[in-house]
Image (cartoon, rainbow, N blue to C red):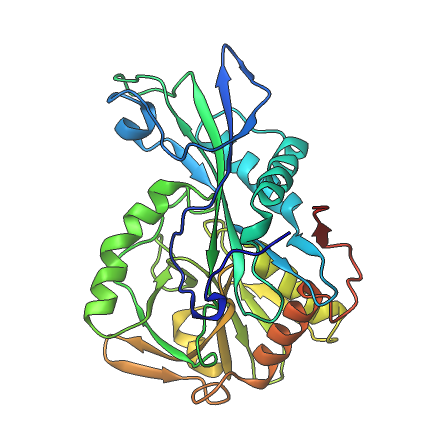
Length: 342
């Protein structure tokens, strides 16, 4: 196996077309056998359900090379289950869990030359997604769907180290009460685009959204869950029915308890008490944890004193432990690392 001739350490977080992708079609009430194909183009009707009513869900995970040379992914079973939940909420057929994992294995194996070498800081990002493809003009679910998986090599999220970012309290709502905030639907991210562009124009890295019902409680950011560390050193996880159940967040809380012996508290967190915490991080697939140094609440700065200048000590231990498990440096107690035989 010969790796592609790329400047792996110089890669950014963007799309690069790779050789193969996986496709399966749902028609007449069932999924076909699926296949790994070359063609990256999608042909559909101008009236396709996804184009008219945004009926689409997606996932994101990574393949990478461990210290001992294995090619692995991390907890793809949870991505499969979350995609099934997302599909059910949007009245889409569920792509079976076993087939989801098999499709990931096949597309990574077919693009093995694009999996970055160990130590480069790069990974192979994997994007499974599903959408309504037949013509739909009345407001109703599509009858035919396409499930696809493509890959793209991406560089380290933090070049030159993870520096604490500054985020702002958004005036926009990320999700409606009893809406779709808890699933990974494309429409949720479309709603966040204006807010993130606005935040960037104002000099901030991200938005933190409040609960849409009372606008007093912390929820999450546009693309990541929030973790907090209190003065006692406990890990506090904001709780809400409209927060996306992040695979990374669920893994980090388990790491906190089982590897680091930390107390994990999942509860509602108010904006008013945010200044009582000493560390904050945004967790997700891309960066694992992005440290937050400050939150700007309409001109009032909330500073996390143990993580303002550099990644705080608890957040750093969480980051180092989880990435150590992923890269094979630390024992995987729970069988989270899924090896792909090339």
